[in-house]
Structures are given as structure tokens and as C-alpha cells.
Amino acid sequence: MSTQPSLLDEVPGELMMWVLIVSELLVFGAGLAVFLSVRLTDPTMFAESQDYLHRTGAALNTIVLVTSGFLAARALHWRETADRFKARVALIAAAALGAVFLVIKGMEYADKAAQGIGPETNAFFTFYYLLTGFHAAHVVAGIVILMLVAWKDEPRNIETGAQFWHMVDLVWVLLFPVVYLLG
Amino acid sequence: MPYDALTKAWIWLIALSAGSAVVAMLVAQGMDRRIAGAAILVLALLKSRTILTRYLGLSEAPSLRRGFNLVLTLYCVLLLGLYLIGGTSL
Image (cartoon, rainbow over all chains, first blue to last red; front, top):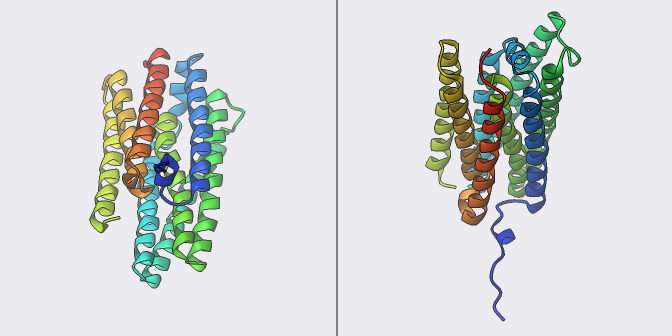
């Protein structure tokens, strides 16, 4: 009886982390599809509301996250080649960029609050706060995980932590264009 | 993962992000929003594929990579359809 490798044998890294990644993609994917579906009811209001968003700040945050993801991926490479110091520095730098993302996001939220805009302003902002707030919560979790694996820096730990961080990155590159650009 | 492949992926992601910013600026200058919407989603799809392939290591799992790419492409088509049905003019 031949034993052919299954698809699951191909999975890089932790299988359960992939289960989480797929789950998160489904949740955010459904949220973004519903966002565009609700837009069908009042596209003008959605476009006008979108003009209040900080597109430049959000674009900058894309650069921040993909660079942070690069550092997390590089950390695994360095750890696997036994360069623990570089790996730790890269993980701490990746976490620091995550904090930069949150600062930029916080500035945007503060600006909206100063203009009297909140989750109950209209349907657009309800989804805006729901989607970006839920994503920001994942960024916070990711920062904690990156710091944790910088401390407990076994290659397997770093790989798993980096996988979570790349998932956060992946969600943002889909969320950013839909919420900020498709007006 | 080869060192160069990761660096190339990062540069590619920065270039795609810059592309999204350029399209957003062109919209402000009167670019057709239907074309802009399609371009923005294609750029998002390319970014997603790069993160999956290079950052998450699916380059080592070609069958899974094809599956993810197919589902992501269909999803982006769905998003584009919803965007176009909703109208694109202010």
C-alpha cells in the first residue's frame, strides 16, 4: 500500500497557525464583503465618508507593516543560521514597527473623535471602526507575540510568531484598499 | 528561504503599495473610478499573493499556493463586482 504525502504535509510551519490564518481571513473577508454590500444601499454616503479618512496615513501604515513582516521573516532566517542576536533585534524592530502602526492609527482615531465622528455616525463609520479596530487588536496581540518569541527564541517559536504577524499583514493589505480607496 | 527572494519580495511589496497610492492620487485627478477600482484590487491581490508565497512560505507548498491564489482571486473578483454594482460616481 503506497503512502502518498497529503496536502497537509506540505504546510510550512505550524498547521494550527494555518487554521487560525484561514479562520481570520474568512472573518475579515466576510466583513469586507458585507462592507461593500452595505455600500450598495448608499454609495454616495460611503464615498463622502471615505473622504474623511487619512489615506496617506493608511498608505504609510501599509509600508510600515510590510517592512515589519520582512523583519519578522528575516529574523527566522537569521535564527536558523544561528545568528540569535540579529534575529532578536529584527523581532524587536518588527514589534516596534507594529507600535508605529498603532500610533498612526491612534492619530487617525483621535482626529475622527475631534471631528465628532464615531462608530454611530453612519453605517460606513460603524464598519470602519469595527474592521480597523478588530485589526488593530490583532496588531496589539502580534506585538506581544513578537516580543515573546524574541525572548523564547527557538526557531519553531519564531516561525509561529512570524506566521501570526504575516496574517496581520495579509489582512491589512486587503482591508486598506477596500475601506480607504474604493470610494 | 533564499535571502534574495525575501528582500525582492519586500521591495516588490513596497512598489505595489506605491502603485496603490499613485492610483488613489489619479482618482483625485479624475481617473475613471471603475478602472481605478480594478487596478486597486489587482494591486491588493498581488500584495496578498506575495505575502503568502514569500513571507508565509507557500513557495515551498505549490499545491496550497495554487489553492490560496485561486480563492483569493475569486474573492477579489467578488469585491470588484460589489464595488461596480454599487456605482462609482460621487
